Image (tube, rainbow, N blue to C red; front, top):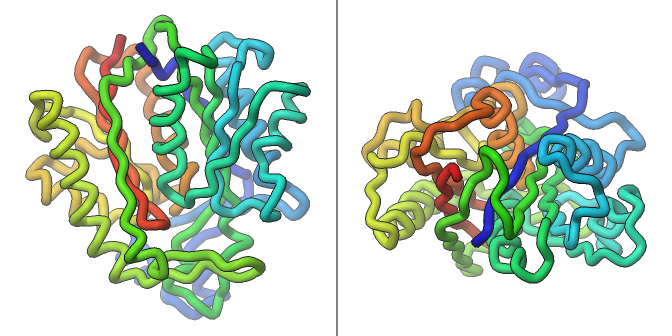
Length: 310
């Protein structure tokens, strides 16, 4: 049976405010907050790589799990903003951790990649033992001020978790997973080689606000639960208005959704794990109630995971 054993995260120290982006893009600072719920985001310094951010998050996670790098049997690394096409940041992270033969696999799916990596790890844990899942993004280098609708949203950061085939104190049992793909909308959110993020914002939010609630409801129905039975939802921090739409569709209070988007913006695939890590740090001994993870991202790819404190 698979478990999430620990979380960790890291965000750069450089803060970029809405006022900073107003000066760059001409988009009014108050409008940015109203349309997204974002007040500030973090940008990585020049010379820092996706793998560098991932390493710091991974080290925090391993420390929380009381594990050493040699205890890891597999790395799954999600990023949609890697510096090059190949090799990806998974092998870079493996080298930084001192590995010379441990498998390290890239999952280059923006926004939804961390959830997919956790789902894969849940199935692979019986074979590999402790699996390090890392999601790291430097989206600030993948935006263009000429497209303020997109530029105002994104920030940088990294998150990590360990998925294990054995329980540990205050770990989370992965009860069920589900994820989906609809390639008919692939052009609505894309990043071409050496280009900037292109996003048809209306298409994304309309599809996300429909698909995420359905995925959650389907998963909960399979497990004889209802949305009201879940006191905490850890969701990809894409846009505050999207979180509100999902809560309304599920007919539950929006305060059941953990939110940190105001401080970090949309950190793509890292956001789910950053949110989980921050929530866990504030709740080191969680209640016995189930938790739902949910994401939506490029592809379109989306899904949800049901966990129970163990």
